[in-house]
Length: 153
Image (tube, rainbow, N blue to C red; front, side):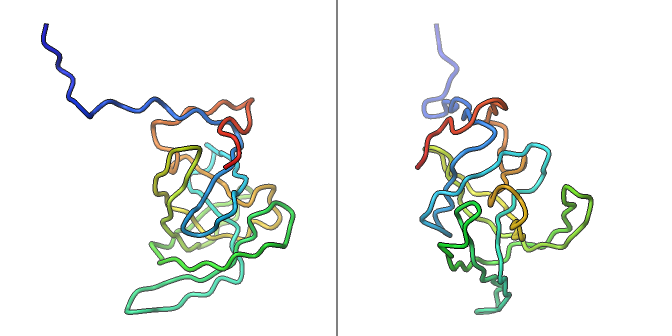
């Protein structure tokens, strides 16, 4: 019997995650960031403050600071990223806001892929990082009653 499967095209099993997980944004920060997985949110967002836009070599950039630890002002991490886009985002309270969009690698467990993420002041929110459904793709299974299924990086 002849096999119709192609060598090297085996699909990875789905990534199984809980409603909150430790995430890494390796191009921005060396610290793990506690992320809320939110399928009700289309767009992902990171807590960024003191955001400043500038141009370098004809390309638009954003510089900003992150505070990766929940409810802590320290450490502060200085970041620079190219501006990918701008979007009007509706927050959970119904207010709309134009936000800067950057593209960064996200690491959950051993998997890494690039996502679009908006820069937002999330100081009053419970999580510094919100991972929305656009970032999750089709190969992620979320267990809503579980947390930290991937462990801490």
